[in-house]
Length: 96
Image (cartoon, rainbow, N blue to C red):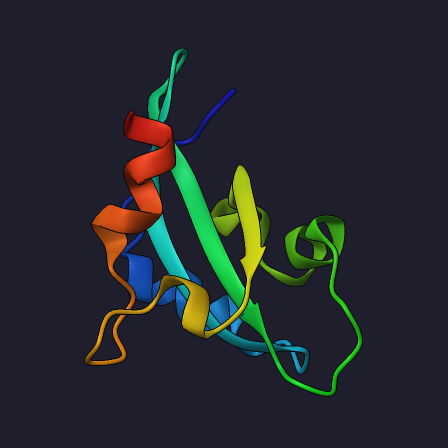
């Protein structure tokens, strides 16, 4: 069962980046055959910190903010020239 709620991407990003091993997070909608769209998050971990797993990310955030899709990448891998995450490029692999 799912609860209807309004969550803004920045709320989820702020919750995830409070983890000491996570440097940045970008939240986007990812298509889902059952629900239409689900929460997806791309994470860049802190350099010099231990690797973080998807299960650890899920445990770190509240159950209501729990992303269904978690991708872990390097900071420069998914950035635009102005140092913003290009949300459309993050979604590209899922909307193709």
